[in-house]
Length: 436
Image (cartoon, rainbow, N blue to C red):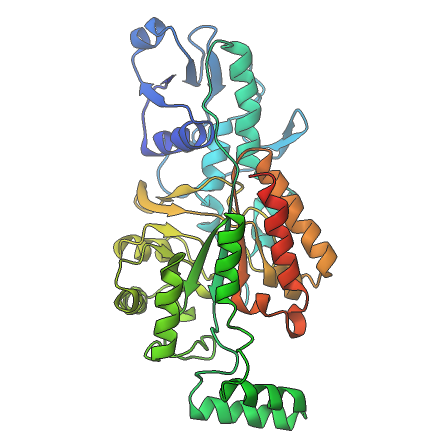
């Protein structure tokens, strides 16, 4: 156990230390404001204050973990043995910056509460982030700090025994459109034929007809394959289904369609299923609740996992709504236009609500890369896309974190712009199975 001395115990402080030590380094932590108790402790101990009490580990505290609300924070980047850092100080300490204030700033998404320019979908864009501006977006910086600090602990307390955490890979699949041709309804099917005909896509007309008549499998119906890959390679897969109303941005099959309901039930028998809330739900608790109840009524169990459609996330409102509806896990934390670590960590963390200054029960699972980012936004070749995914995976492996990818069911169709992506998906499983 680690005993931490500080002059004041705050919600921000306990949140940050438990994330850094308990969740990343697997060290139990206890806090005290009593000098006598701290001095009497013979084990692992650390002072987080303006002055050290003895020769223990000492981090000189800045003000961030003792403040409330959102304030202008001056960020000046520096280096700690070649690693990016900020909140530096010149006075003597175990390390040359406030590693805990920096961790809180990144993992709480403090910068997303500050004024910023939103993108076309009203999202916080990667370009506005500290990580993008200073070129550490592709690294789980908090975990790297923690593992480097672990070496300092080992050197200072060689008798202390660390628990080992293991690298984990989670494959997540968003189902924006479960079927390409089937179960669209008469009007949407006729519209599809007209569109194909107007563009002289004769093969698509033939293919659509074969699928609608039941002579061929729908190309987006890749669910059996995905479940088989999960079983074959032993890698956890989570499916996020959309059950919202039809809009310009939401073109899923109707949640009233019995075939779609059967699909959701079937997938839920073999894998974890979560909600993929619709485009306009991200700031509307009423819509979110309606869709959550719809999915629960289909597969008869509580919906505990969620990822926003288009990755629309507005802090703190989106997460406050999820907390109110008792959703336990969110997988939205990532960027659409860039790969990397939005919260600078590959360790799941609890959402800290800066508006109310509390740690909430909502656990955030940050993903590292999305198929559409590589293919559509960055226009990478298949070979280059695979290299990016594996490089990110090994960044996570180096700190024994959780590596999460975001694919779509249509990506596995092996058709059109996703040609050969099914092989890439399998190759990722094969490659990462050897390091799990």
